Length: 259
Ligand SMILES: [Zn+2]
Image (cartoon, rainbow, N blue to C red; front, side):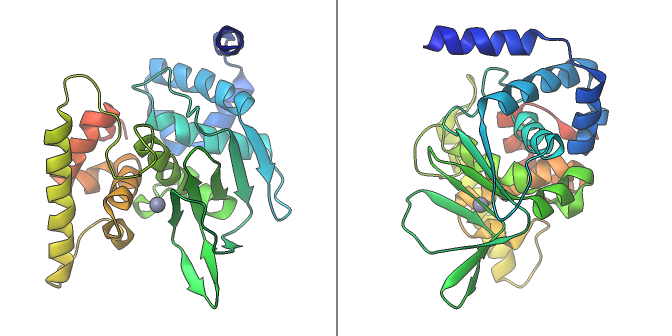
């Protein structure tokens, strides 16, 4: 089965990117224009494979167009440029709503939501991620981050960062699988220290640069910091230099030198 999958994947990947795909990538990911030719070529091929391999479902009347698929795929792919063989294999389905949506409160385990607002028995959600389950997004939120830096926010980066966090286990703890040579305990200790420091700053009445939603847990700190790392790398590195350096060890792409 895996030979078949990887043969199909390889054939799809090997096709030369078309002009149309290039335009769709530019529309779906504003950073794409600034990538090196090598990274850009890889991301075009990678996104084509990702789109073909996932099940796409529009919810509440949402139409899944190529524009939607490329925007989602490119955001997932930018995060794993340093890991060319990673295709988020634990995620088979992408659900897209037109706008933030109402979700019933259920116990689905390892559920991570974004901007969940409680409204009389129901939660309004921007997106969510389920371990070995779907990534759920809303197009209004996705497209805001696809076309501009959007104040450092990007729904796709957020939810796919949670998926990366859960590669090494069902518990999202803010620790993704680190590359060889990066000590896991050192990284975890430093990341935990930065998380606690950010909480103390806010508790003492001062400001932090990233969205306060990141202080909910270390997994949210990782996801929110990932958004800022790729969307507003200069400001993020200025105000949270240690977190920037830690994420750089994992993502291995210095966004400050790109955008
Ligand atoms: Zn989250």
